Image (cartoon, rainbow, N blue to C red; front, top):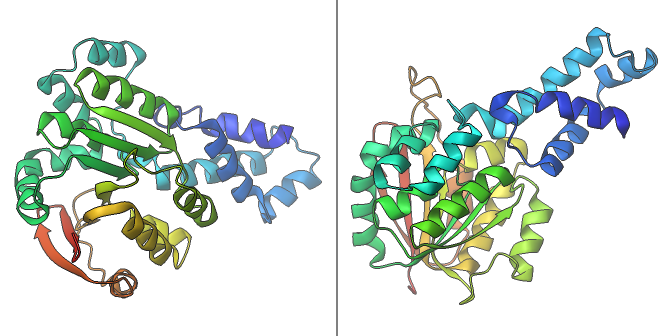
Length: 289
């Protein structure tokens, strides 16, 4: 356990990974070390801290954490910057924060277009569930979307920052640190009602650039998550997929049949597709809404 903590601590010492929830980071470290040949080789060297195996394990853990989190934060906020934003959460300042995250930076000029389509498709909606949220919740007050939001991510520090800012902007907000890639964990929380809104469910759920990484790590998880979201939303869900790689230089040509097959397994829905330069959005409306 001590060695696991040492590897985990060094892995998250990088600035872009420092705000990740410690329990989540330890879970990732445990998964990386489990049945790992490099770990066995390090163990055979009596856990020599100067060995190449130890360095390799730290790199493995960092790579895994970046896959699910760190790659999107291009310029993390410093403590003083966070405090300044909390003191003055103006539209201009929140837009500056959104530029620090790759996805919201790309999305920023497209938000009015996207939200117009959502309003015409879903009608009015006041409560939102945002899974794997990043800085997307900051767009809710900036573009006048909804009155309450539940935000889910893996960084406790980021969630606390978002809660403070949204509260100052008059948005009712709650948060949970959840590793959505852990199918058993999130399924249990959905079914137990721990994620439910006070009214029992949400109007819409946002799942932006979420399913590709989840399905890669846990094949079949898409079906379970969609079923949970069907039960937790009144009007529908919005799912997005990247159209370009993180660098923006190359287009992503993926059929994603696994997603559409999982979607078709749900009860009645209607789908509207909205495309921007960097993302494809599926606006999925329940027929009984």
